Image 1 (tube, helix red, strand yellow):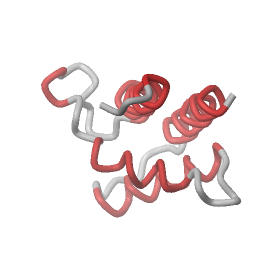
Image 2 (tube, helix red, strand yellow):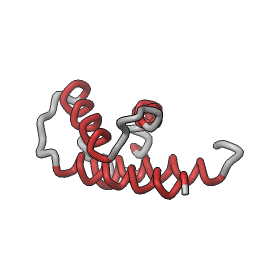
Image 3 (cartoon, one colour):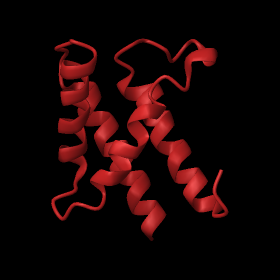
Image 4 (spheres, helix red, strand yellow):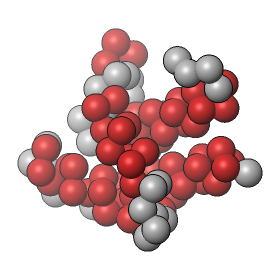
Length: 95
């Protein structure tokens, strides 16, 4: 937890998008596994520092994680939806 409640809310919104929308490992219905994607939070947060950051780039990052770390090739729909949800959370955070 940080000293900024807005930052904590932003991180929680990213976590929720990863669990509820993206969820390549199917952990959404298993509360004890809701920290499963926390290792990717820093990678996603680092992405916002790039000049080319956008929802589609976040989706590309999620697809790359699926392929490289989980050895999966799914439809890109979940990654795109999660990317857009994460980008919207970012826009709310910086507003």
